[in-house]
Amino acid sequence: MRRTADEATTDGGASAARTAGGPAAVGLATVSRSRAEVVIRPARGWAPLNLREFFEHRELLYLLIWRNVKLRYKQTALGAAWAVIPSVLTMIVFTVIFGRLGKLSSDGAPYALFSFCALVPWTFFANSVSLASSSVVENERLVTKVYFPRLLVPLSATLSGLLDLMVSLVLLLALCFAFSVYPELRAVSVIPLAALATAAAFAVGMTLSALNVFYRDVRYVIPFLIQFWLFVTPVVYSSSIVPARWQPLYALNPMVGVIDGFRWALLEDSPAPVATLPVSVGSAVVLLVLGLYYFRRVEDSFADVV
Figure 1: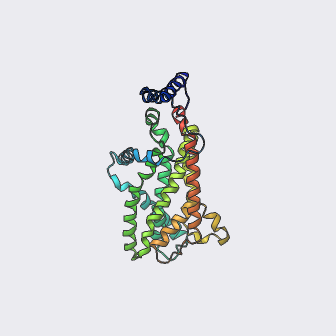
Figure 2: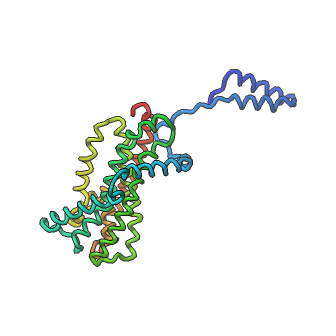
Figure 3: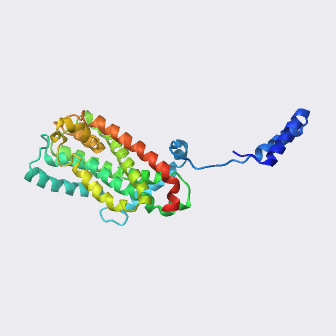
């Protein structure tokens, strides 16, 4: 806050009036306060999240999520069925190639069910990262015309995939019953595991969305990144084939703990992810904090660059 010469003079007059005990003291003090100049500067470096601001824009977040969902299935003949069709087709291909021909271990479970347990969270993660990474650039007009917390853009792109995830989970449970696999009470742990997958997808997608504003090469790297990430994630194979000494390093991939957790929660003979899940949780938290730090640091330049 800065003070002008007029304010200093007015303050002097107010002090004199208060000393004299005159009624003008209150009026002069009010004028002095009304002329105070407030300078608002953009945050520099690490700026903590303003949760109140997010709460005030909650309706905008809802509208962005609903818009993303409608655009995804607009003018499609099958509608929400596309939430599960890619996963089902991929499961069939994986079952034939890796289950029947490759004879990969499935920890005693039917390979189709084994692979689909991994494909449900993985498909959600891959789609969310892909959508969130391009969200800021695709919402160029919104970002440059109106002020709102920019984090809402990649967040809405990530959360819009939760509907697909819920539909896929229903199909996964139906598939379990079809294979005479009846989940126990531990099946409710898929809820925090889905939250972990959401946090990991948001962390990665948010960081890539900020990078994509400044470096448009990112959009060409993302498909390769997701494809590479698939093969370092236990989707087609069990993480038990990784040597024990490499398990902590392997679990730095947050989706390792998520997929191991899904299989343990829904399949009977899958081992508990005691070696991978804690490391994956810590890795997701670190990615989220670093992503927030970078995004908040550069978001004030989005409108000038995008």
